[in-house]
Image (cartoon, rainbow, N blue to C red; front, side, top):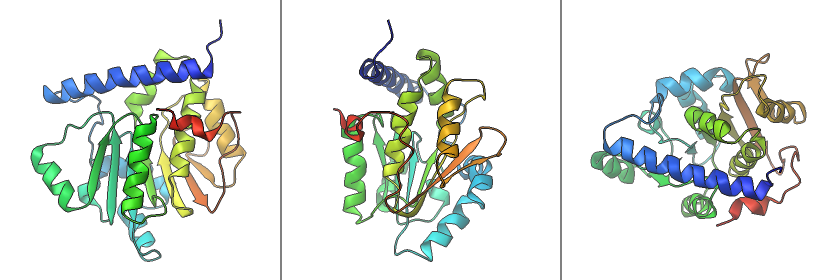
Length: 244
């Protein structure tokens, strides 16, 4: 029997809960949950500077010269590079919070926040928008997504899981500053996997998505301009992402 989208959504959330429990336990035991977990600026620059067209600090400096304030989000990551960049507000969304007490205090002083939660849950989405509202921000100027291990385990558990990936991608796109906010993300996919069809279609059917290298499926850059929307690849309402 073919699994329904709602059933797949529920199963994916249960998987995220298990991952969160595992990450919390491993972090408490001093074990790194993923190879790139909590990595710094060097790793993010290595991943995204080519598709961005410059290193992350240079991109943010350019945004700062054009806007009153700059806000950055690390989606499905711990914001390990935040201390190495300059912005007016920083938000990380990760399944677990393994920060030291010293980092928690430093983050609080510098308007850096970490939400421990599943990005697909309505409660997490509400907290993200509360952060933007509290800072008077129309959206994030830069969102990074480097959840390589998360994508892999997600696909191993649920074959042909691209509908869930589209929902996550669409939610992140909606969180961008409408004045050319940028999402850079590495979906960590092979050209032969089913999810590749989704990501290639987004690039082919939009004028604001870019991929690097162009002949593969590496890092994606998606820029938001006004009320533009992602290609409508699934017949599901946006409100579905707000499900508690």
